[in-house]
Image (tube, rainbow, N blue to C red; front, side, top):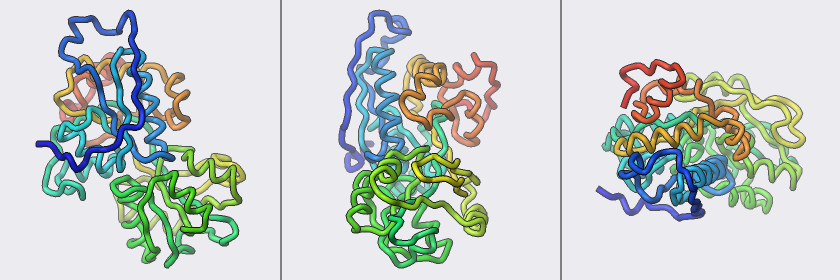
Length: 327
């Protein structure tokens, strides 16, 4: 069954032909000629990361790879489940909700055809405001205009829930990361709340172009939200992650994984996993958040079965994948 209303916009197409692909012609006979990767909005880490992974896969495997703008992980999970996309970049909170049939996008549909491919990085929850507004924390924006990224993305899903848990009620709008940054500079919103791998490109750009304050949570807020949301973990944003951010920030984080449909050919899933996890130096050329794209971080998935191709790669690295996590 196709969910055409979930289709996204293609933003990049990478085409590369290699003379000696890493898989033999016989191995590749059931491969598709092209792949689609669901990312998120421009200005966020998922978008940059996904486009970069697409370029690597295209160059090394000789496939056409389309990196598409989407609403983010909530949408990506469903696009993979229904076969609209081949690869989805997701955070594990929305993934678990979709797995158990409580996705806001497709309620009642248990996304049991989705498989984990490789760990990506943690998404850190933090926010930015113009320094002239005197904002130093989340509660300062109670009743003010804020953006939380696109609807269906991790921040767009979880920030409104967090506001409610903290007992504050800002006026929330949903837009892309790049648009939110422009709206903040133009005074159309008072705060831009996001969650992504560090550093968030739109936050870095804002820090370079304007006098801004970047902030996380107070210890009390962090403790309260940890009790309310078991899918997040305590996290510290290191000092100097952004220009003029001299102190570390208390935050919360959620792991991101790349996922695929269970029907992806095993050797294709294996080759993609090997490309990504086998050369971290190359991944770091895509985005600094890839410092966490490491084989050992497979343990940060506790419920979603890995695709057999990913299991094959992990086992080659000496990892014993539990039976319940084998797809």
